[in-house]
Length: 282
Image (cartoon, rainbow, N blue to C red; front, top):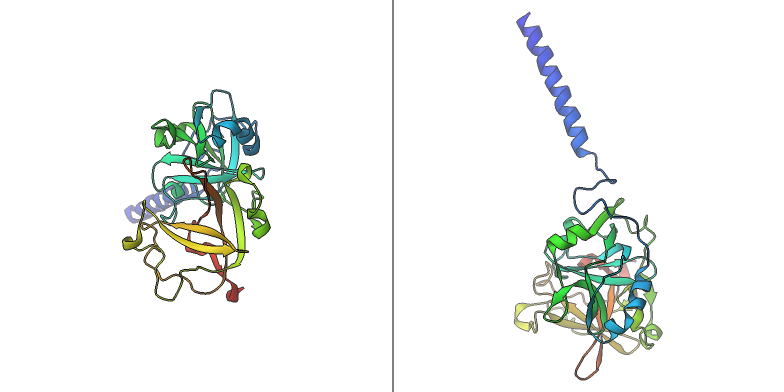
């Protein structure tokens, strides 16, 4: 009788444990554990936000957002490989913008394809090299907001999926970068059939000995126009040998405008090596 009783008790314990495991494993997309779930819905687009603060951005200045502005967007670049540092990029179909956060490991909450709502009131918007960014105030210019402030201003919505959220990179050619498209940058793009100018079968992506201003710069050319690949020595592929063939690449196109000389440099921000797609494998 005692043995039967023990078996029954063990069965109840296993059922309870299984039930608890099932409850734990099921994701709660309506109330994710990170961020501020009380935030409302977006009331403006990223494109309209950048238009409203166009003069601030183009002057490489900074201003606090005091209006009740809420945007939403899908994460199209994050720090998963270590090549991007303390920032990510969101795109809502109308445009994209960089969000600076003084924290690392952001990809754990902000996977590629994750849609977020961002309450901009109380945050700062500005231009870094005339490139639009949301964040905090740093030495009189645009910088990164604290991790605590970010968590109070962000809400995660739905499952992370670029396809489900209707976001895909725009394929661009040389004609695109010959135009004045600063107001549309940063931009989530795909560039087809290019190669690294420095790739020779021996050169690495971002070795320590070539670091200048915390990055290593590599180059691709699109219809004769040079685009600088900014690569971090902290990327998990920094010591890999550069790919030598032609490839398509997906990532963030930016353009840095020097405040002193007003010279323009086209730049590309790579999220991970998965975004380099060899042409011969397609």
